[in-house]
Image (cartoon, rainbow, N blue to C red; front, side, top):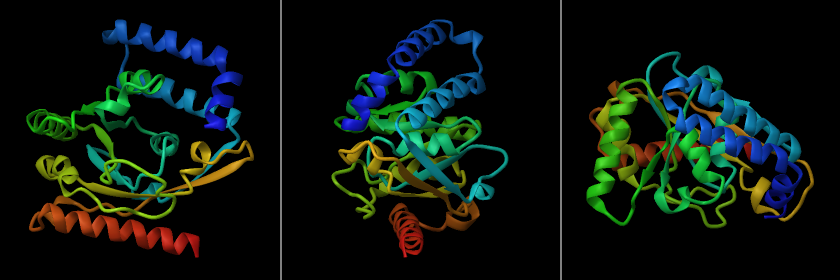
Length: 237
């Protein structure tokens, strides 16, 4: 929390500028491409990282498919997770996020800028509608970040159980699944310190539709979770 408050305070002119700019972009949506929106988001992220003394090491960018849509499934550690992935991912991507969390200050504007999807976890009918909508977007070439743990609670570098239903987005779109292992991503906003911190983002080899078409969501969930756990173990020694 200390770092969040510090970054917002020291970056206040930038925060106000970007909030106004995002509002303008949203009002004049037809004038801006997804690439232009993403550049605005990445620039805001770079300022946050610099002013917050945060560095993110990136591994496995060669594993990202060069074209078409895909879904990145990452372990969840804290508020920095999506920011770290976006800083590492050069082409436009967006986020599937719990609706309640999505309306927090700044997060709401960020989701609006990236045209992310908000998941209403209290309503099964709305959940299905959102998942089908995301699947259609991925089919059309969009790239999504999904956190199949469904939330975080002092996870640190431990990976909690995945929700198999989270993989329906990829299964219904028959798109590649990219496992993403996050390491020390809880530290920027979960440790009460302003000391410089380094996190890691590992993009693992994709699982293509041909690889998982005979599997059910539970089997896919277990496979991806185990790959992420092994990567974290290897990287942490």
